[in-house]
Length: 219
Image 1 (spheres, helix red, strand yellow):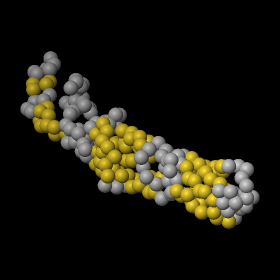
Image 2 (cartoon, rainbow, N blue to C red; image 1 turned 120 degrees about the vertical axis):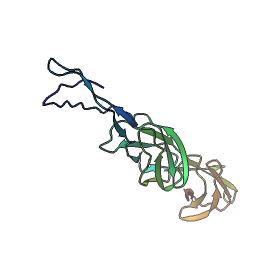
Image 3 (cartoon, rainbow, N blue to C red; image 1 turned 135 degrees about the vertical axis):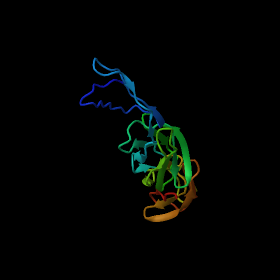
Image 4 (cartoon, one colour; image 1 turned 180 degrees about the horizontal axis):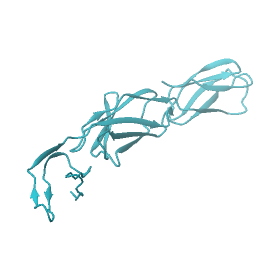
């Protein structure tokens, strides 16, 4: 482990390289012109696994539905333990596992765009290793807001004759939007159309001069 100079009959060697477990330590004095060499009896020193703290963070938070979110998990040694944790962490959304990843440099990042709209209680469990004990993070809240949409409306035929049946088509982006669209002629509602592939239609012969559409949103 190294050599240390004697001062007042004592030599001290500081080290942080001892692995976890029991170590049989001995010291060998080489002697000098006055004193003969000697070797100590075996001294047993035990190194226990260091405790850890696991934390979770996400960015961006809040996020929009469908947006990619980076969820980072960090495992740190609690003093006086030191070093970089190894092993793996499992990420949870409530009681649902989002997967397991190996630590690199004491951290792991989970990327997902599958979080549903609303508040998510995220936590991570570090399984531990030979040198570090396992730990579970505190709950971390990540919020997913509804994604912004844009709605446009077209009609056919256009122009039409009074009393003629007209098909109104509303297009909502992104196309994954679900729910219904309400069509208006000025302030008067003409009815609802269900979205399919981001498109809803309504046929009417009751048009006045203008028409519009409003996306009602989804759950």
